[in-house]
Image: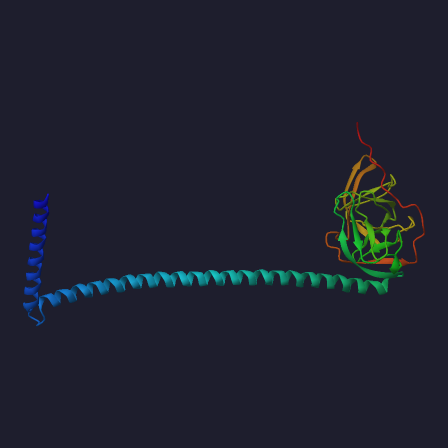
Length: 287
């Protein structure tokens, strides 16, 4: 074992001596350009190392710049997305304000032509149940609003005050399933009852067998139910179905758009003549 270690130390010493001689000779041997071979070799190696280092540094710098630029683009995109959302919200608010202003202008233009005293009201809530079509307005008993007072807008009849409170009132819409309005066909004076279907339309019932009803006919209030004065616009006949001499179905599309009610008028005077309000007849269930 000792001989093996001694042999390895001898070989290592021999290699070191040979390398030393080579370096010494390289340092003394000059190249055609003047500097020694050792110096030229070292400079060449260092130059290559520097070139490689600059290449690596350049690549890292390029990647970092790309990453930083990408982050900047992402931040800019996020900012633009937020601004776009804000602008869309502002646009929707502007459209809503414009629509509300248009409705208010229409009501203000309508009021001088009405033979009744009215009070304007804002719609503050709608019914959450599809089985009861109603709205809540911001006027109530404190504003002179009473039960069964008609509610209209510039398009036509909306409904009646069903439940007045101190500062608010619930208005039953004419499209509710339990709502009913005494109406007539404007062109023929044929009278009937408009009942709510619950789907945004009305149906005419109790028509005379000899009545003439056609699609496109205008339907107005008849003024005989003790609630709605005569002549208020209700809607237009949309579909007529006959079964022999009798009418099987007459569907009326209301003039008012019940999906976007914002401002309304309550007819507060003259007060409606009290009478049991018309209600839709109970539907028979086949068994």
